[in-house]
Length: 462
Figure 1: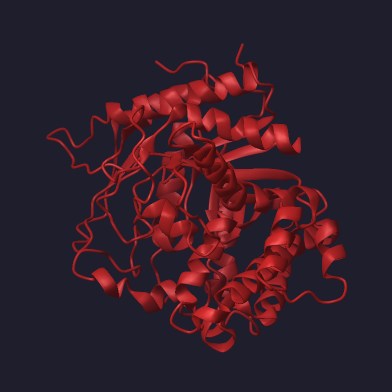
Figure 2: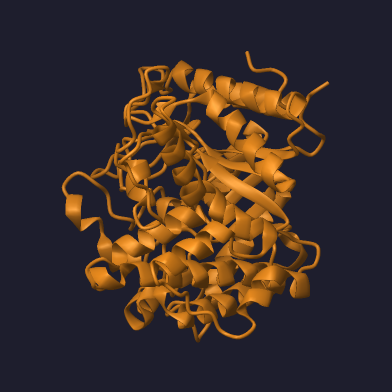
């Protein structure tokens, strides 16, 4: 008998800009990702115009997921596909596309988990309001969320307001660096955080009214910080980093209020978020039903190193973590730490007593098809075997209420930096950064392995 409960959700997660393509088709508006075109490394990275062409190949891809046994698929919506300007006139063709995707998933009994915001926003809103620093961004998102939730009705039972909301704050701040004087950065960061929290609460409050059957989960990019030594100053630094990176946001999701250390830090820095009357009660009413997270690596830190809400994503991606001698690393320098995943779900559940959903996990590897048109990715199988084993221990030994396990990029997709060579999938997509080739799909060795894992509800990991 499996340690995972009946109805445990198995599947994968993607974002709209990394899979859809069709960047200007059927009335879709421009987004921040469309505009950037990854100009800083245009010779080595892809733009987002085609991605892996899920927009035209969704039936083929969903059929492959169904054959693997997926019970769940988390995808994000392109806000600008539904509202080309982010607000105002609705693009019916965009809603119809997502209707078709949801219906196709349900045809195979795959539960859709819908994420409303995955780092990308309509370009018009970015230019008009400066993104999430403005209260108007929250108001626009609130209207967008209501359109989506009303439209999808009882077909969608799970919503994620923001992908990795802690990272979303950091990315927004990075995009505002050239526009905001350094002296105003902390004040702007507080405004961005508050407006995003209000938007998350809006999804929960709107769902309560228009889709009372649905559950809403706040999501963070969770990376445990380890002290580099047992020196008390290193332990204190790691604890502070864990609070800023992981726990403060979860505190708001679970408790509906800002934690004491966050409020103290704002007062200390003479920063006051732009609270309006009724905001704090709105947050309290919008407490999450479950807590979702991504997990890729743990990070190691020592005294003197600082992690701020503005620099979170750079710290995670930029190799600023110290080397942990007990862990191997991926080709991209990310620590491979299966026990860190057990620690993650245990910490979340112990602290908040809400169901936990591991919604992204995976390893990016440079791969090419072999002479048999496949990839013998035993390293990926080993990676997932070790991580799922730790989740089994978290459930059986630690008593964690775990909802499911979704892998990141179950089919090869563009990375967040526009890299096709960083492949996460069980399914190989034949394209490079600069050569679209034929975009044909091929099953890797891990495809059949994960199918057996799902069919045994996590019991068969061999």
